[in-house]
Amino acid sequence: MVKFLFTVGSWLLPAGRRARWREESLALLLEVRGPRRWRYAADLLIKVPVLAWQLHQPATRWPTPGAALSGLSLLLAAFGIVSAYLFSSLLGEQTAEALLLLAPLALAGYITRHTVGRARRRATAALVVVFGAFGPLVGVGILAAGPLAPGWLQPAAAIAGYAALSGPAAWLTITSAQAIHHRQAPLALHGFGLVAGSAFALAIAWLPWQILSNGQPPLPVLAAIVLALFAFLSAFPVWAIWTALRLIIQSARTTDPG
Amino acid sequence: MQTRMVLRALLREPDGEVYGLQIVEATGLPPGTIYPILSRLESAGWIESRWEEADQHAIGRPRRRYYRFGARPVDGAAAARLALAEADARQRARQRGRTATEGALAW
Image (cartoon, helix red, strand yellow):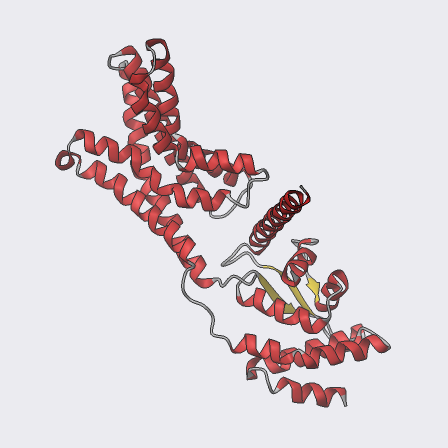
């Protein structure tokens, strides 16, 4: 009798899922006894239209707007940084430098998305978002206000400004190192992130020194800066494009089951 | 809410496998509620399932269908933890808002 009812109930489901639902439901019923078995049988039969409705829904294949925007902004960051390097003669040195320093701002959406919900404390999340995501803006603000400060405060303002500019790089270094430490796949992606983040932070670290000492760095330091810039320009576009595609494709494959 | 209960039940053994009745008992939800949720999680790629590989006559009962968090295309356990953390944060924010409103009304 119960088998017959479940056979009839399963007709509501797509053909490919009928046998599975029948077998799984009957197996569950056989593992319980007494009134509970009848209660569960009734519940399974009453709610089969819910399962049927769900299984007949077409799967969503579009990325969620948040993921799509974060992914596109990462692509924009990669494009901005590659353009700053390739077209520096066309753009002019100052524009190219500004583009190089401000392009990481395009990571803001991704960093915010990555941070919110993972940070255990709201204050930590806010701090990471302000300095990690919007660090370039904060840095430019501090550097612009620097000359207005008293003379003795100007070196500190320069250091704070450039430290804030390297916020996204510091964030990328730390999160990539954590991902590698926890052996999160794909390791190569986090490797690129670690190289890009640390190289950018290193390349930016000499800027306040240059301003404060008002001179060229020694040759070994200069060589390290050039190497760091080369590492950043090679690794960052790979990390950004890979992460962006992953974000968009995974989001498109996955409907939020919540 | 019910999806969260199922995710929490699955997260008790993030690397292990559980079958329908175990989730029913862990959550207190009836099976008719559990299976649509499991199906939704499975079609989203958060979990995967397989039939028990055992001789039904030898074990003396029908085979079970086991569920576990998947690793591809989505790291199901990580996605579940993140979703639960976000849901808890939203709930805490709502509670704080409610407490603040009640406090203001009391004054």
